[in-house]
Image 1 (cartoon, helix red, strand yellow):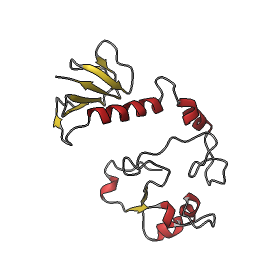
Image 2: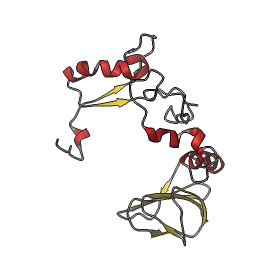
Image 3: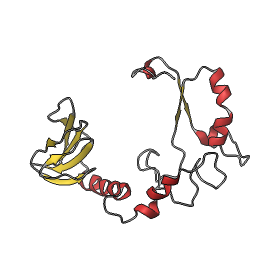
Image 4: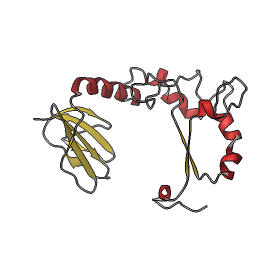
Length: 187
């Protein structure tokens, strides 16, 4: 197996599919992943190299459908699970279900909820100004003194002075760990 080039998407054909209208695999009149899988030979004949799935799961549609409701251990899982789905549900899915994460400090669900709460509180004009940027750190400010800093590197970096509102990993002694994003109130 060869590794694709970093810019594979520049020359390959990507086919966007909305699964609920593309192909019905179980005969209920609504497209699903089983239907999509059944049409892979057709997509191959078209010369498609990759498939982009449009959102098709339950969503409050606050973010164009890219904000799915958290899945449950036993509920319909849109392709995974024991409810007639076409893909087996990995064992680790239960540990990241809404039941397991609801109210659990540090969980992804609670981080997401806090981010949504803060976004409503901090939201202003839809503009940003780029801040100090290095090879591994990206930052920008939004109206109202909201600073976002992402450390894409491996080593911790010093955060600008301000009130830490949210971070995707623990921040200690003013150092933002690698692979972490933080929101601060500054100014």
